[in-house]
Image 1 (cartoon, rainbow, N blue to C red):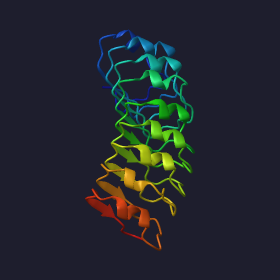
Image 2: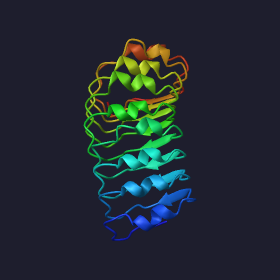
Image 3: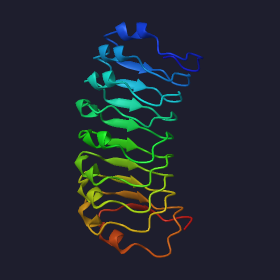
Length: 212
């Protein structure tokens, strides 16, 4: 655990700790990861929150056992093309980065269960989000979304949808397909009428409409 230090580079020596399973390297000044990161084949949890990263090396896609990746509060805009190789990744946190769209590369993380995209500037979600069939929790609070794609209705395992503080006025017609959705947050959205599409969410248990 390397927290609150003034390192500006990720120590390459750590890449030789091939049996490491959990690595927390947050609250530093790291702006780049070495390609040698691929050596950490047994890593399951990697916390890179609160650094200065703007991109990730291709080598991170070789962390085949990685299950949790925290990268909140960085400046990441670019992702490796081979993110789909992270077949065991279940949780990805990208809170407060510089994202203006959801990269197609992330839509190939077909086993992801929790995706946090809050605090960015995302104004559109791609239809290919439909590929995230195992997603249970989607947090897209505090972005610039004006609508949701029809593809979001194909997230058959989605249980929690947090779209607090966006500009969404239009909802997909097939919201009823989200049969496992239990919780949705629509607060701080300036809604002037209740979206009829939500009336078909028969398993919904919690609905937040505050500050409208």
